[in-house]
Length: 71
Length: 189
Figure 1 (spheres, rainbow over the protein chains, first blue to last red):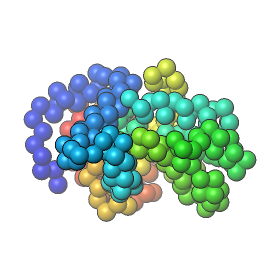
Figure 2: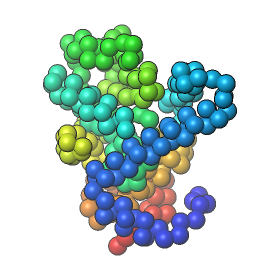
Figure 3: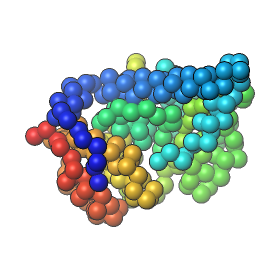
C-alpha cells in the first residue's frame, strides 16, 4: 500500500518525461555519488579518530554487507 | 562519477571480445523511469568460457575482484557472477543468458541507447517493468523494485506495448503486482 503522499506528482512525472534518457541516467549517477559522499561523511563524523584510509576500509566493509541484500 | 567510467570500460571490453550483453536493473529503470541511487550494475551476458581469460585480464587485481572459477561455474549452471571494484565498492552483477522464454524474449528485444558518448544495449521498457515485478515477487514484495517498475510505466506511458506486457504478466505470474501497479500508477494521459 502506498502510504507516502505525492503532491504535484503530475508535474514531477512531466519533468521526468521531458528529460532525455541520458539526463535521467546522469541524475542516477549523481544521486549515487551523493549517497556515497554522505555515507563517507557520516563515517568521518562517527569515527573522527580514523584517517581517510581507515574510513575507506570501513566504508568498503559496510558496502560489502549490502551486496545483493538491499532489495 | 565513477560508475559511467566503469560502465564504459566494461562495455568496451564486452564489445572487443564479441560478448553480447544487455544492461538491465536499476541503471535502466533510472534511464527509462525515475533516477535513483545505485551502486551496482546488472547486466545479462551471452558469454562462452573461451572469453574468460580476456575478461580476467581486463579487470586485474588489486583494483578488481573477478574470479575465473566463478565465471566458469556461472556459465555451466546459467547463474551469475560478479565483478567488484575493491577501491570504490562498486559492483557489476553478470547474469548468464538462459534459455527461459522471458530471458530469450527480452534479450532479443534489447536496443541501443547513446549515453555519455558511448552506445549501451539495454532492455526495452516493457521488459524492465516485467523484470522488476518478477524481482518484487521473488523478494517477497520489495517496494523498491515495485516503485522502479511503476515509474517506468508512468514515464513511458503511451509508448508501451500493453499486449506484450499482459502476455508476460500472465506467463511470469505477476498478475497481482501488475494489477496493483496499474491501480496505483498516475500516468499522464
